[in-house]
Image 1 (cartoon, helix red, strand yellow):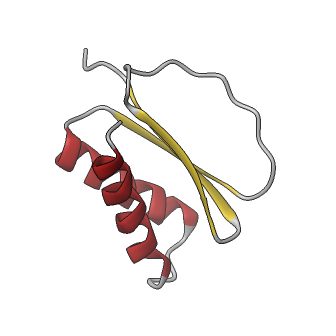
Image 2 (tube, one colour):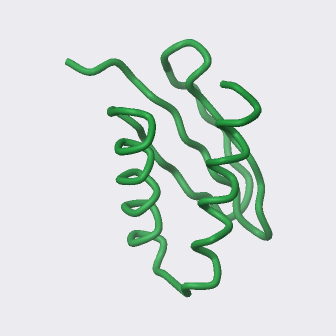
Image 3 (cartoon, one colour):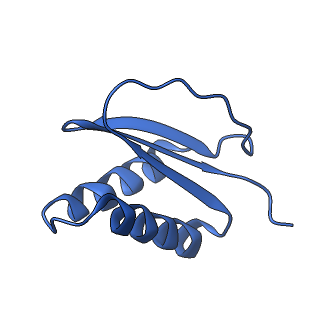
Length: 80
């Protein structure tokens, strides 16, 4: 994923933090935005604490980052 796309995702997530959204609402908003901005099919996970994960994704279509107390994972899979 290009640094520009990573920054765009990071900034969008950061813009949602002040809205005091539930985790469910936040994941839905991030997914909808990713699908609209970068085409479908994106998956979003927000984690509070440690995690271990294995998953498949399209090449160069995955990003994980920590913002405040939460970890954000987004990745894209092929459209079927």
